Amino acid sequence: MTTATTPEPGQAGDEAAPSAPRLEQFEEGITLDRFITETANAHPENKGKFSALLRQVSLASRLVSARVNRAGLLGMFGGTGEVNVQGEYVQKLDEYANTAFKRALDHAGCVCAIASEEDEEPYYVPERFHSGRYVFAMDPLDGSSNIDVNATIGTIFAVFRRKSPEGTPADIDDILRPGTEIVAAGYTIYGSGTMMVLSTGEGVHGFTLDPAVGEFFLSHPDIRLQPSAKLYSVNEGYAASWTPAMRGWIEGIKMPGAGWAQRYIGSLVADFHRNLLKGGIFLYPATKKNPEGKLRLLYEAFPLAFLAEQAGGAATDGRRRVLDLQPDQLHTRTPLIIGNKDNVDEVTRLLSAEGGP
Picture 1 (cartoon, rainbow, N blue to C red):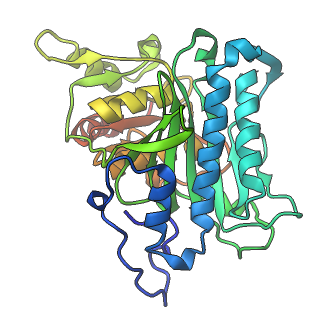
Picture 2 (picture 1 turned 90 degrees about the horizontal axis):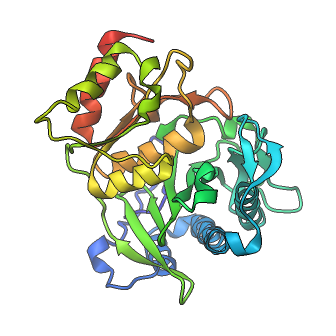
């Protein structure tokens, strides 16, 4: 597995980087910190900036995990009374997670800008800190409507290499990038346990937090999706607003003998995580009311699409590959069809042939 800071494809004059250690070289019980170190050693030209970024993501994830686990005791349930740029009520844990990740990353010299679901505008690294070589895009706490009922929630993130020179102030062009330019992506899920799922471009690997020692350990190496599965995740409460092709496909797989099952939590990161480990397709299609979709492209659809493809799956907006899309603003939205490749391809063919809502 190579690190995310290898030169971007197509850069002229870059020397070939040495091969990263293969996953089977790691012994059982490896920590995330050692995993970062050993894979980074294959690319000394990165000067530790990407390693620093991942370590700060790990730190912030552990802080949020600890707060989530004690939310009831700390009075962290419920809202703040504010509404964010998405028109959603801000939960206390939303605010905490957003702040925790920004504080962990802004001073470390590895990022130049942070794009967050909770903020109307990008957060640029203050002048007193070094403006690093990466952009960090995040949904700091996906599924926050489930907080008060103790259901699974998580942090979703993507990392881009900035376009402007390191050490100079970043701008919006460093952030609004197609998904093909992602160099790393992942999520941290806070449920019965805390797990970080990460890809830096060569496979998908899961690390489970051991709360007794406060460290993530490699628990799910080289996660792979089979070509197809017979499990689907969708909110059928919106069925009346779907296109005929979308409704027809769902009705077809529910016919006697089709063999499909439904599992739906209502938290994007939780539904995706279960499908990534067990197989399945998640659908949040366009509707008559929202033909452009509801999920945010930059920090929800992009990172999960990156992970799905790295695991052998696929992700489209119903017509186009998600990673080929270009956001035109920080909070650009998109439909999302994601999971096992054959299933995604089948739905995409049907929706593409039909046209728009």
